[in-house]
Image 1 (spheres, one colour):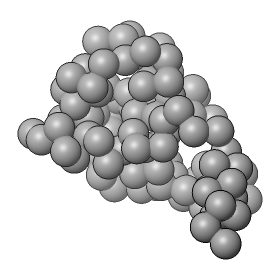
Image 2 (tube, helix red, strand yellow):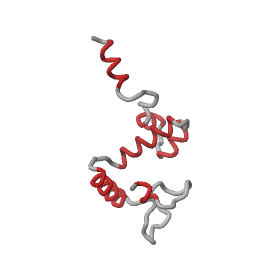
Image 3 (cartoon, helix red, strand yellow):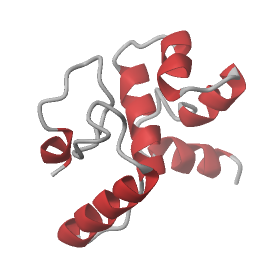
Length: 106
């Protein structure tokens, strides 16, 4: 469904471009994005948000070699510290790291 919303947008276009004639080529509006998330969540029977997708994008991009500088630019953050909050789990596998660490402290 996400790919359907993306349509045939190129790499230099917004991730989810507006389908309206007036806003063609511009990013999907906040309202449009919220409606898209509601529709996809209902079909998938799970709750998630655009913010969740931003975190997923940042994490996957970092895992695939994106630099922190590029991620900061992609996400539109003024501060590298903000970007770091999005990618702090990179390099860890699942939740097993937390369980191992917890068992060491007992």
